[in-house]
Length: 337
Ligand code: SF4
Image (cartoon, rainbow, N blue to C red; front, side, top):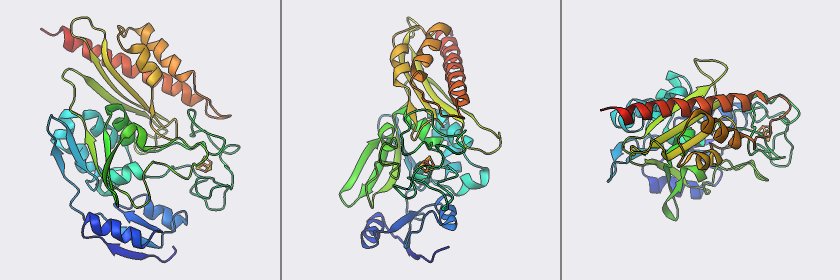
């Protein structure tokens, strides 16, 4: 591993100032992805700024019923937190679907959102990769790509984003709170991660030196039901081939869809908010035909590669099943005396 400097930040202000003084630095949270990439020679920061001990690990109630989840909170602590489990169970389920128990005990919420793709060519410094070294090409395009993107990819990169949490946050219309030299700002979770376009080296819209300080969860709508499901090669511990986070709220009087949010994971460079399907479902009775047509309309835009058309089938079945399950749950609740 290349030698690097180490700074432990005592406050957010100190962390950002240290980054300004060492522009080639990286913030260190749990280190479960960054340190691996440093061992592989993929990440070569001159300095690590340790932010893992900043007092940003609380789960707090916000006015109106929302939650603020601090960025240095550990994935396992957030998944088990009573407020998260009762108000947003899909966040707990998404977190528990990610990584192993040991990793979740160390990995932070901020680091979860900032983890890099697991494209094997990105992790191998002997291979061409526009994300690791812009302008060198994309070895995955003609290589092994059965797990790569089917939506929103570009000529420059076909990688997927690995976070399960990010998919749940996209479905919830959560916010990502950031702190930098210009102060605090909040970015919608749906806008936080980017599609690769001409600049696959940029995973997110975070600015140089900015740090994720919290995730802001909205208050759950009364009567809304939600779920997170994931399909992977290995049940114990693997990244998603396809995943779905869905929220459904039916009008109690008519049974029509009052609100639906559908986010797909494992299919694109960012969580894929299925807005075409959502538009088709909103205001409709979500029977099997309507759900099938809505999901098909969304996935008509998929562009599978030579070896990953199976992911479109997985996503289609997963999304249909999720919406059907939620409809049954919501209908049962609606008809309960
Ligand atoms: Fe690199 Fe993206 Fe191509 Fe993978 S898919 S080799 S991350 S450019």
